[in-house]
Image 1: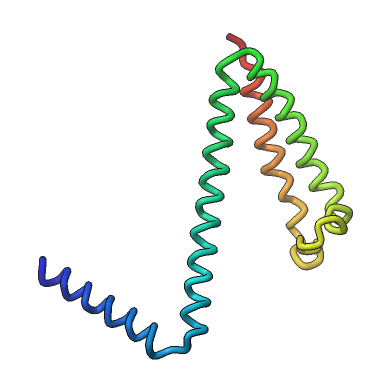
Image 2 (image 1 turned 45 degrees about the vertical axis):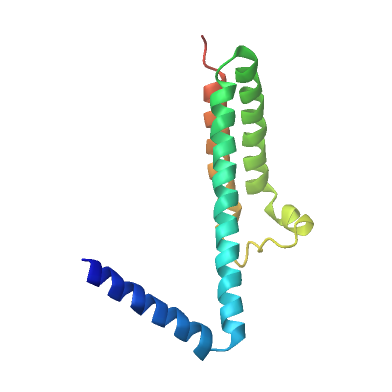
Amino acid sequence: MLWGFLIILLAGGVFVGSMIFDVGEGFVAESFLQMGFGGALGVAVGLAVFVYVAGLVYGMSSANGRKVLLVIGVFTILLGLACIMYWPELRTVLTFLPTAEEVPALPYIGVPIIGTGGLMCKLGSLKD
């Protein structure tokens, strides 16, 4: 098992060494840039999910927190409806978004947003 691990480690080192020294420097720089962007995106998504779940748990722990969850849920439902109904107008403000002609199902991104708002409303309406 030790020899197998050492052979795999040696093969990985040879592969990385050949990638660094045989191809141009632009390829390596682009690869590391993509890996860094992917790692940063993963950390950002993980942080957003953590904050979202922590906010839900904290919001359910008190009466005022449940009221806040209910209000945020209503606004989230309205945001989802706005994404569905007003996608072309939203696209004129946020120009980096693709058009509905490029991706026809894109305006329906509001459906999971509405579902999230419904969950917040449900959790905010629970009684003690």
